[in-house]
Image (cartoon, rainbow, N blue to C red; front, side):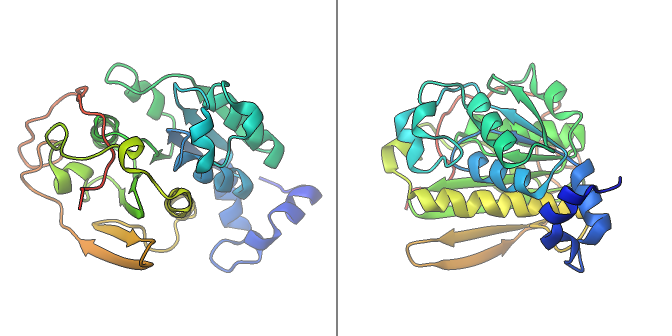
Length: 268
């Protein structure tokens, strides 16, 4: 892949980085990243991946832009209210970087479509806000041998981990969705808008590191932060041999649609 003069200037700050360089930027431009959920997490992730020059970005979301989204979903603007989120995001990506190919899927993910959507992508970003989608994405990526970044936010808190085949998956840590009503939704508990930006950019960084094959991914560890106190910590995990989806004797052998819309962090 040869760079034209405009691309050399556009990506110059990557090209001069020792751990990226020309070869790394070529890998980024050949990369394919799927973002499931173009909301608080997916919006900043999409902006940074587009700016970085990721060759193909897939956007999955069945919702339209609402006024309440604009407090944190920074890829959508006031005139976009009422517009499908995937189309709103596609327009902004095109404005940031016309090099990027954008594929849109104006739908939610469910057991019948997710395997077909993720199969052609190198890396998946989970930007969803409910347990049903998070467990489905995990299981589909385990079955499809696809690496993905998990992210969850609530109030002032965020958490992230990265899965690669053969390592700790989301179910290894959390097992199954919590009882209904045990965890408030973002609409019930609130979310500081900047927290979504912090987490989404972490997920974008994980995707870029994976594409260039450099650095240490959030594998076998959960990164947790509290923005109100500005404290970060990590919890290390090992792959659970009794995990119901990736364990030695898995009990989940097909994709299932869970019922339980809720955000992802435990209520204090």
